[in-house]
Image 1 (cartoon, helix red, strand yellow):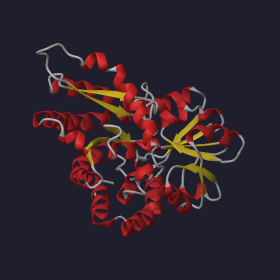
Image 2 (tube, rainbow, N blue to C red; image 1 turned 90 degrees about the vertical axis):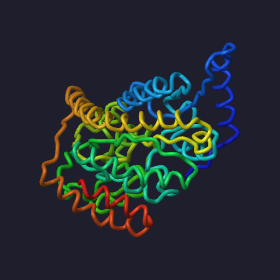
Image 3 (cartoon, helix red, strand yellow; image 1 turned 30 degrees about the horizontal axis):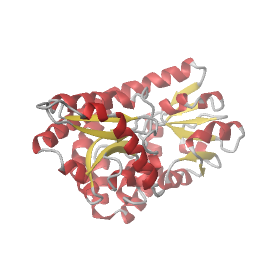
Length: 337
């Protein structure tokens, strides 16, 4: 976990506070407001912003305007590698964290980091999310944070320079850009060679043949224009990582019980709304990749089973290192694969 430069982060928060000073200076008798800044790594136009915006608006409505959440997109408040520490330490009130960047500190998050951690179907995911919630709340509470809700990153694909990767056998000897320790272990299980590269460097890495392929959800594949240098794209029909929304525990305790109840209710509803919307959005982005002249193909049901069988030993390795809470989380996910 990269250590947060707390001094820099506090400066960012101070400047953000100055921008909101006028809104905070309410006339006498007006209702007091709490403004919570939230660090978001992706851009505002990303499909993952759609339900997030709904949730932010719903929180404001359900609290009668007493709680207002302001999202800071594109890492403008904190980088993705910094958000976990920032929220835990109270430097940033709220933020989006990704399992691949926190599984070193919270080993059970490895289940969500991996390709295929979540169920592949809408029905399975809708059953898994509420089953996971008590465990997620418990694990984040131990880190000084309150878990609010999550959006799974559905429909992971792999963009390759030269070939479609339909079956596990196709990966042998292929250099693949991955994110996180456990995705790397999955690639090794397929006989591939995992390579750690910053997301911003993937285009050049593919162009120069430093890697042959790159894993990613279709929004990122298209957004980074990886289809230009790696036009052979396989829809693997599995999830990878998740968007987890958390708030500092002391910040949460400073809200009234009614405000906490309203935010919790909005969070449950947001989680439900996100699943069908995201699945539809990912299909749309694969369509856009096809329109951009990429060769996009999906794996078969038989190949999906073969991938899950190939990854099973890696999940078993996580079971050995993630503790009781982690194993319980893994058990809940496996029920709905």
